[in-house]
Image (cartoon, rainbow, N blue to C red; front, side, top):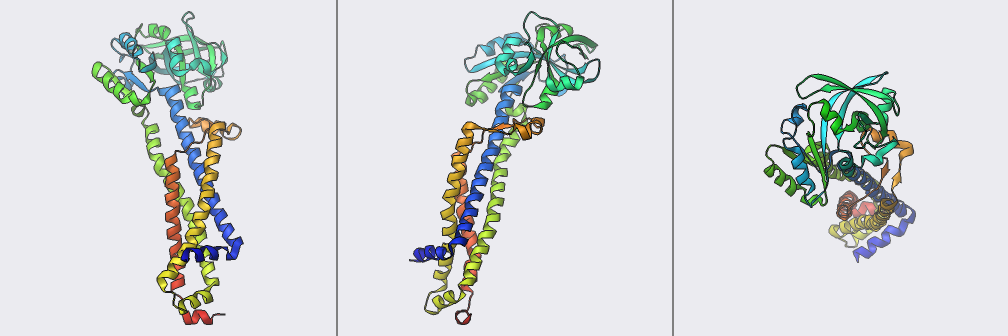
Length: 405
């Protein structure tokens, strides 16, 4: 009975009730979409970082990551690489020579990371060939050629077939310089990566630093991410002379961002629901004050305060519960549609997102568990928002309320 009375009371002022329901539905729609948008960005950042930068796991000399010194190469690296490539769980693996130094042109100079690659296996791991925007990919025949990012080319004021000089230390600490000609330009979603990473043949740079056929780094992708922990543990046990790390250890900032993002999104949604709750409280308080005489009459003829409290609370809850499914459905279908088609924001955010390593083409995604969480939070919000208007109603003096004109 109280539910029926509460439902009828909602529609006594249809315009006001529809406005409140509309604000709740739109708030939930926007909240669900923004969560999906943010999770889509984070998911793409992880996938792109794994595919283009850090791979699923990497192997180094235990001392290499501390100082990045050339002398800390992987003992028996070639044998280790062959065994890893033969593992059925591994999708692709490659070896690299990694050196930090200075890159110079006739116009400018800057710091850079020189990566000596095995062209075929590197392309299998990172897809570097597909990122070329100009020129050709490295092969096993040409010597002293280099691929650099478009950002770095702009900074150095060079172009295809320009010559640049790489300066670095060899394995004994001597300063060396090598002249390389630009054979290709590449571009990724990450402008900082493009500005610092320079790719040459491993054989060319390995010869210069007196490490022919050796690697500083082995990077690999696995078929099933669920097997990653097992593989890393096995490699650390099998090769104690090397240190094997998964992507979480290599890029802890990405791991932290993913782990903490769930909390950020809950806080974000709480802020939206808190803003909506003030509007709901204000609306219901107005409804109570407009019906002072009616409420006084109900109390005078015997309705106790508990039933009155429940009736006013039900009116508030019904408003929210009626609007919530609309907002949730709008959010769900919006996320599903844009999750398939994607959102191209390159016209507005291309450079800004690239500076932080994010793509400007986003595929929103939201797991089902978050719709359940949103539903629970909406119900809690409705319950909390109903308390103050209901308390205001039961505090009325019946005699004074009836006399109120």
